[in-house]
Length: 491
Image 1: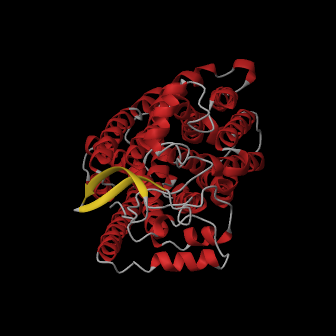
Image 2: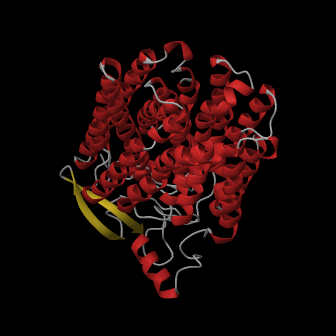
């Protein structure tokens, strides 16, 4: 986890540093008006969104650890070179390349973790991963305040040094990951033989663990012969958090790529409910990352003081995100936490819109940051927990994040210069997307309750025969996964 955290931290430092560079002279030196700056932000998400699902599908072939290290190294090198870019078209090209690289990092790393941890342990790990975005938020402000003092060194502007120094750091982290990031539990260099055996036993049983090479699914209570590792109660339901089948017809072992599993992922209703919920969250969080320094300047602060005032909301956000995720893993609930946290976001936007003083509006920014960022691990873990099978899970996690990151076509245009200093229009748009997140999450919870009830009452008993007919006809070799009638969805 420390290395995964460091990789994501370095990437998010680079992703958010354009906001710090903007108020440090980028807009002035390159003569970027509001629309040109928004376009710089937008083009990143074009290639980012298009590359996410394909990138996740190649992970099994090239190994996630190698793929993540390769992408991180490329990201750092590209970011470093962006500090030397002299023209607006050049920056557009750099942002397109960065989006292409980032499209593999975010879904790849969440999928990587979903293959290494039990479902009931996953959200806290994803929260640690995404907390690096918040750490990047406040560390980025502090670093930017220090780095811009290099203005004039080697005849380069201070904002250029932000890109160069942070990009070089990411490049070095990528090289470190190339040698230290393990492919799976069995090959972890930092575990003793006994520790590996214990970790494998916790994941599953023997070699049939849901790792990167043999993903058999989770949370299924089969009436076929099996081992159940852990049972918990979720909303009065028996939720099996880790299961390994001994019936080879239901768990065929090594899973091969097939388009049928990709289609199942694309047409899963939970992919779209949670994807649209994540879309709303991403509009809120990306616009916050990109424009919070600008919003702070609208509150009357400037220079290094404005950079420092961006720090406190991120500190609070990290604490809330980790605390909520620990509790969520403990009680096996995801969606209800998103509903509660999204209400914080809605309250924050309301304060920012209606607040009469700068302190009230600044306080609203705390709630926007806390509610938005802290919801992301829950919504991502929810879909990972409710999906069985390697390629279906790779598809749904890539598509969910792609839907979320399509927010990049909206977030860059939310806060424009003519809205200064209060940015009311941008806050109203953010409020609307917070409501979208709440509604989509509520619909997903209702769907899971309905489907679990149908399975408990035996109305999905025919799924096994349908699956066996597909196997007998040679149409699939994938495991039954979440199609099993005893699979229970976590709310």
